Image (cartoon, rainbow, N blue to C red; front, side):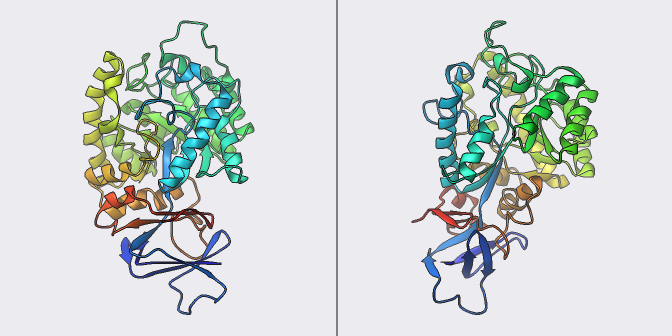
Length: 412
């Protein structure tokens, strides 16, 4: 048994920071918060002093398998899709996983592979290694390969403008055209351990083949993807920047929109009506290293990013269910909390931003009965930051203590 003592703790449901904090942990669970009776004499105590305890933060949009060591900060290497073999890439993912955990993010969604692997789901392998204690990292919800049409935004050949035949890709590796292919692709990812499905629903800013707003799959294909995943009890996340693609995803029953940059007011209202989640990845619109990309990609960013910044305050005001996600390495791994600062800049209160990275993210992965709160019965994912994050959200950038599943991984 471990007793954590601190000056303050965040009651996310109440939207308040309370004093003092005494959190009792037994095994991998929280037993009590500020119990009326002192803990047993046999308990080990950790007095963290003048800090605030928070639930472990969550990043619902990142890719641990790219970026990080050996590449430029703020952007994956332009040739990441062809230079790294799967073994080397997975080892890089292990380093990024530790960096992410040290930043206070104890749960992440890896969305999703967009490289040639021969059909191996590297993020599933990384998740298993972390779960079995072979390596230290956050809890990973893996998507396997992103489902994308040939030439679509998450077709890895279009990031480098590779010539035909240079890097052939299979349905198992995410390239799927037509209803039979998308069903087979979703089934393959689930068969080999994916816990969420990622679909490339619209064009993107950092790929060469399509306009950011273009819808990449037909309504029938979207419906087939959602149907296959939902029958297996798996949720679907859609990379969707363009308004028509976002609307098509909502109509198909897709659970979560990633980015949503060009959503109109009517589409924002539609998200509210359907309860669709939004992972807005808003910080990348000011931090992405666009100076190092091709001129045509810089032009797309200059057109899309201002509209994205204007969209999010409307979504916040409308009451869209917004979860925290960074799209790292679009911002460097380990700087994930800058997304919380950006959410506050766009109109959230600091406690609303913390809620986006805890309770709402836990709801998105259907784990809000055991993650996202400091409460009895919940998993002991606990971090500590200096000061009062309800007054200064930037304190989440300075994580002093990290516990995941009752195990201490970082301490002063």
